[in-house]
Image (cartoon, rainbow, N blue to C red; front, side, top):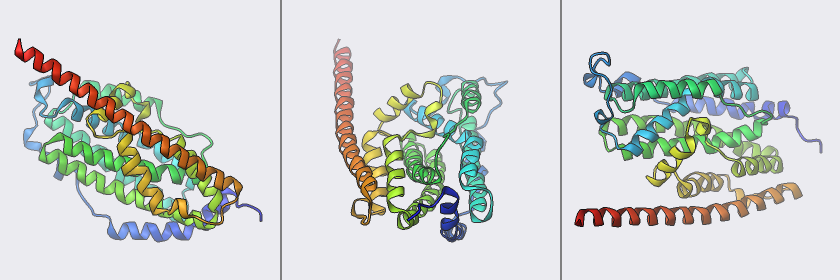
Length: 312
């Protein structure tokens, strides 16, 4: 049997996309960014310049909040990639524009919160925004199936990151805001997850291969942020987003929802791809355990050092 072209596959999936757009529009909650910002805390920066001690957020919370915001800031690039992959006609076009509008709201509210509460250095944040957006984001050659698989994992990863950042902030307004953003991200994940589930019925082996590609090569869209590697380590050490969370709370639940390891009717390439995913997950699980042990050893060493200094 001739395999479907990307264009034919998008056309086959359009009724599913339309049903899920309508589902999303029926349950998505309207909310206003200004309702999540404590405006009474605002002060003019020209009369009261920013200083590090003005933020009530712990350092790891500041870093995670900024990384989450800078990730949202690259929205024009994400819009272009998705629009090029799915098209701008029919249900796909409706989704692309609606998704973009909702994502844009996240950056508005998050930036306003950080500016009003002086959560981060506003000059450094703006310079990092310019750096990030000037680099943009691209996935040249990505297929629609790969794109759907990637955003299924990425939207859930973003939801988890926002939610955990809010909790780590230990500040009620920040937690409420980031919980609201996380709720949007969860609905976005469900849209893409449902599309991939439908694709698994239409082209199972091909879709499994796309899932394999995106799991093995997964990177958060914020990877291009300045000094991302160091910031990611601090975020991981704080328990906001790390390998254990990625394995347990992102990849595993989505694969379970797709019944990935119970799928039947795969060809040889599809079976091989699924075996590669199983092998990768085992390695990821081991790496997550190793990372956590390393973090705990570091924490214990720092605690001993602090205790020794106190005793002097």
